[in-house]
Length: 128
Image 1 (spheres, rainbow, N blue to C red):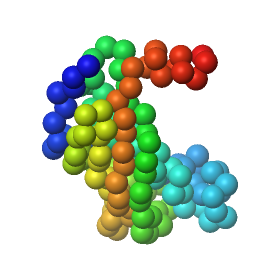
Image 2: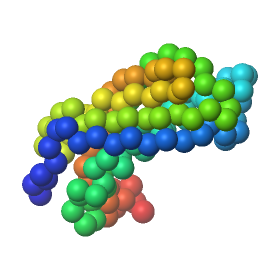
Image 3: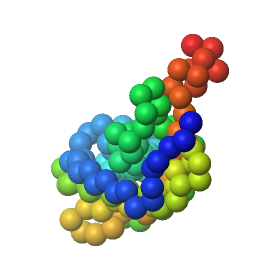
C-alpha cells in the first residue's frame, strides 16, 4: 500500500505533571520529578497523534526507536509541552524530531521512529 504522508507535519501537546508521571511512580528514580519514561511516552504519543488521522482504515503506527536526552527536571504540577515534527519519510518508516519543554525551558530533545503497520496483520504475527 502507498502512503501519502509528507515530511513537515507537526503536533504539539500539553500536560500537567501529576503523580503518575513521577520517577518514583515509574521506578526510574527516587526523586519526585517528571520521569524520563513519562517524557518518552509523551513524545511517542505526540508523534503518533500527528499522523494517525492520515492513515488508511486499519493502519496504525508503532514505535520502533527512540533516542532522546532528558536535559532538565520538571516538578509536579508544572505544564510540559511536547512538540513532534515529521522530519523524514522512508516508505513505511516515519522519523520524527521530538522536544519537550516546561516554563523554565527545554527539558528533552531527540528523535523517534515509528513504522506504519496494518493492525490486523501485526496482531496476527503475535498470535493474537
